[in-house]
Length: 266
Image (cartoon, rainbow, N blue to C red):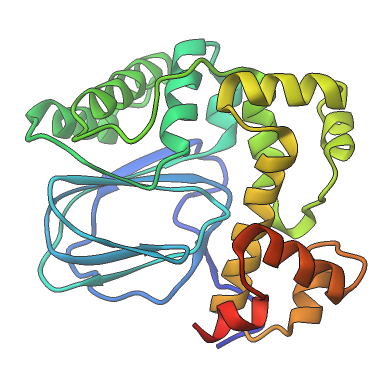
C-alpha cells in the first residue's frame, strides 16, 4: 500500500469528451482515481464486481456505473466484458449552455450504479458519440443518452430534482480532495455568495445543508485514505485541514459512529 492513491489519465489534455469501447482485456485492476474527469461505464456483458470507494457492486448486466474524479475504484471481472466508457471533463459542461443537460449530469453524478432494462437505444447513443466531432451534436446526443439511462433504470435510486450552477460549482470545488475545508463560509466566498444562500440552495436542491454536503465529501475522502493508503491518522487529519488528530477523530466518529482506527481495521 502506498502513501498516495494512484491517479490514471485516459484522455488527452485538449479533449473535453471521449467515448470508446470497454477494453476486453480488463479483468482485475488496482485501486485508482482518474485525472480530472467524470466517468460513465456501460456494461452489456461481463460478471464479477466493481468497487467504487468502499462499496463493492456485483455486476448484473446491463449495468451502468458513474465514477466521479475524486472517487477510487477498481474492477474484479470473471469473464470477458463488453460495453462502453465515456469520459467527460468539466470544460465540456462549462462550454454547454444547455441547462437540462446540466440537470441530468447533476442527477447521475450523485449515483454510483444503476441496473438498466434491455435497451438498444442506450448502446446506439454510445456508438454515435464515438464518431461524432461536432460539439452541438455531441451535446444533444449526450443529453439524450443521460435521459434514456435515467428513464430505463431499474429502479432509479434518486429523485429528479432541479439543480443550479451554484450546486454544480459547489460539487466541483469539493471534488478537489487535496484542499477540503470544513467551513461553509470558505466555499460561499469561493462561489461569490453568502453562507446563508449556499445553505438555502443546498437544502432546496439536495435536501441537505451545505455543512452536511461538505461532511459527506470529507468523510468519503477520509475513508479512501484509511482504506487505500498507509498514511497515519495524524497525516490524514493534516491532509484534510484539521487542526489536530483529536479533532479529526471526534469529527469522524460523530459522522460514522466509529473511530478512524476501528474503521481501518474493519
